[in-house]
Structure formats: structure tokens, C-alpha cells
Image 1: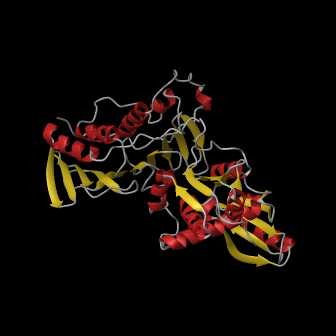
Image 2: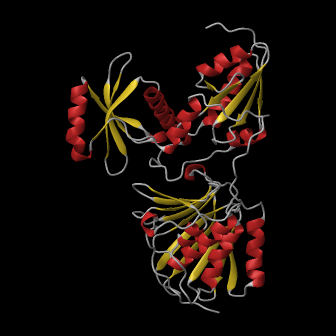
Image 3: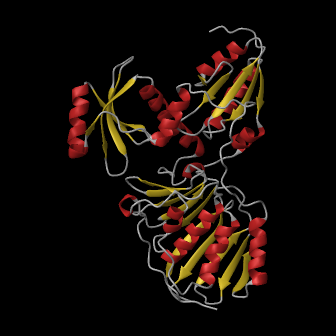
Length: 431
């Protein structure tokens, strides 16, 4: 379709409240033409001079870069905020992606297909008749209304939702087969919206965001280690604590071995990105025994959390600590129970503690940020980690969150979302 001459300025910035959504602020005589281009690319109005891009696959920075390039080709002037440009330049990956054989481009294609399904549902082109939980994820029976009428089954949620490949000639056939496959688990209508779907639909519904330049309270950022902090802490570990001995098997890796010969810590000096594992910690059942448990810590993790773990391993306390979530409860962290996990989130939503009771490799996770898939840092611990260590770690995490008001009073025990108990503590070392 024809557009007016390009005489407008478009500035792209990260949304202040819904990372990684992006706001485009348009000014100039032909700003309407710029907004028309952006609408064709999936952006939606968020005010007289603002448009928002909010996607279910969290690929807003990538598609913003493509939109800016197209607008420049049309002759418009574009500007990308430095923080957004950093997100565009960052090649992040999904944590625990269920299709590890996919390349980054293939992952983006899967997300784009999930985005199209989400848009079709949100805009009424795809009707969900039934849903169920198949033991792993949500499945659904659905029908397309426009074009060639198709009746399909869907599998997955958010950025992983796909068509299963089963196509039916009528709605009745799709529904009958769905009942045959999932039986008593079938429920009418669509499944409840996920938190990501709720956030995306809220933005695309036109609720005005905080446009850059206007006064608004910035979203709280999780505490993050500064560059060089981990290196300095490692040096102090050997200088101040004689229970640890240094080994440097490779130029990029330092190994700290405890005098008990039952704890080994590896530090990767080349870890830089927020998803890079900087520390690997493991405890063994004797100098030549089996590994009892392990943990991985990414590059941006605050040093107080790492110090807490190593101090516990150096000299386990004689008295057992409280349950891992007691400190979080006392600090008014918000509990939530999901089918496959239990979480506790800090009042300012900067840190989350998560338990996945059916996992063995990474049963306990502490991370910075609202979303594990885009976490600023992550600590993952295996199933048999001692309860005392978890309790000390969660207490240290609670101390990192500023408190502006007294903690909320403790609710009755029946309302507490209790995390499952980890392995009992083992105290085999001492100074």
C-alpha cells in the first residue's frame, strides 16, 4: 500500500515495566505513516505518539532491529536507546529449552510460529474448544475460523505452542479424538492464561505504558555482581582462608580444593555473559567418594550468595538451620504453587527462589529478575543439597532485598506454601 513521504523520527526504547517489550515513540509530520508501517510489523498503539511491541516469544529486541532497518530503508530517521541496543546485540538462549538440537534461528522460527498461534487466538481467528494437561504441558483442540477452515490440536504454552500435525475435517472429529487421547483430563474451553500471555495481552490491549520522557517509577533491578567482583572474591578466598588450596589446570580455570578433600570449586575466568556458568561447586562422600550434590552459579550472581555457600562448606554449623523458606516467609516474599514447581518471589520481584520437586539435576533454583528465561543471574542446585545450606542461602538472598516497610505478619500455617524438604544436612568438616 502507498505511504506518505518519510519525514518522521522514531525512537525505540525498552518498556520500563514489561521487559523485553519495546516502545516506539514517533514524532514529525509523517508520524502517522511511520505508525502504519509499524502496525504492519506487529506493533500496536499505546497512545497518540507511542506504539508497543510485545511478543510471546520474548524476541522483541530482534524484531525491533528488523523494524528499524525497514524504516530506515523507507527514509525515516530511527534511534535505538543504548540499553535496547545492548539487548539487540546479546545472543541469549532459553534456559532448559526442550529442543536442544535447534539452532538459534530455528528456535526463533519456533517462537514465531507460537506467536502467530497466540495472535490468532487473541484476535478471534482461532477458537479453543477444549484443553487438558498431558502430564508435561497444556494441549488443546481448536478450530480456525477464517480462510480454509481447519481443525487442529495444539501442544505447549507461550513460546513453545505448536500444532501437533493432526488435522481434522470437522470440529466433531477434532473433539472426539481429543477426548480419546486425554480422557478424564479434558476440560472445556481454553486453559487459563499464563503470566506471559496476561502481560502481552495487557500491553496489546492499549493500556498506556510509561512513555520515555514522562515521570514514572522505574522497574526494580535485581542485584548483580560488578565486573571483577568474582575475581576479587576468589583472590580473597585464598589470601584469607587457609582451608582452600589453589590449582590452575588451565589458563581460563582455577580450582579451589578444600583441605577436607571433599569439596571442589571451579571458577571460569572467561565467564562474562549472564548465562555463562562462572562457578561449579560439588561436595563428595569422602576424598575418593561419590558426588553428593553440585551447584552452578552464573557470572552476574551477587558475591554475598557465593560467599554464603563457600562459608557453609568450609565450616558447616553445628546447629541445623530453619526450613529453606522460613527466612523468605519472614521477609514477606510471595509464595506461589504451580503444577510442576513452587516459587517464592521477593516483594520487589527482583529475586525468586524456585523448587521443582520432580527434577534431579536442578531441583532448586535461585535467580535474579522476574523471568527465569531472561534472568540476570542464576544459581542451580541438585536434589540432594543439604537443607542447612539452602536455608543459609535463602537467608542471604532475603538480606539482598531492601525493605521499605516492616514484613507482613505471618499468616496461619494452613496458608503457607511450604517448599518441599531437601536432603538432610551433613556435617563432616570443621576447622
